Image 1: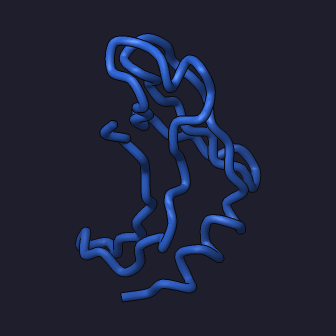
Image 2: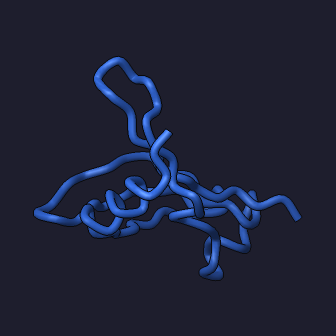
Image 3: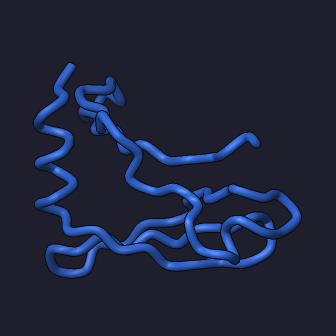
Length: 84
């Protein structure tokens, strides 16, 4: 099977990539992400910062939508470990 997973990148103001997460920050695990028109797929569509949390709206298997959450400090820690 082909899986669609998500890394995070950090870019400077000139859109030059300065860091990339070493591991995926999103991958299909829930049944609505695994079964659908496009199985094993998650794809981010939007992002909203609320306090120290990032809320990510995403499509799941071309069948459903979801909201993911990650602590901004946790994400920045992952990015800081893999600066380019």
